[in-house]
Image (cartoon, rainbow, N blue to C red; front, side, top):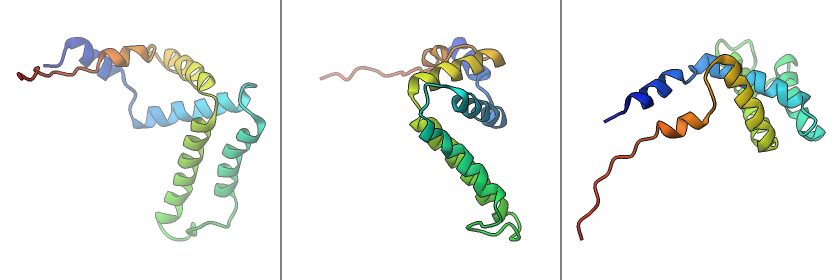
Length: 122
């Protein structure tokens, strides 16, 4: 059985587009954070430069695929940047963004995990 609290927390989770917006804001905040090393801050700018320069792996003239590879480079670049950034800074900024959006602290998510099992009889 799923508890009401678990359903309430699940309902508070952001959707795909809101999560993408949160991730973009997280990258922006991390680029401005002094705790993040300068050499890591180059990564998001390289991803944006790839999108802006006309030299692509798949040309933008190819319908759909040209835009998909640009989106994938932005997504992978931002995920890599967030993954390599100091996790204390990531957690601090992500929690501030989620609280600003009204989703509350991430600690509520752990309460939503429900594992039901019966002990084995030996």
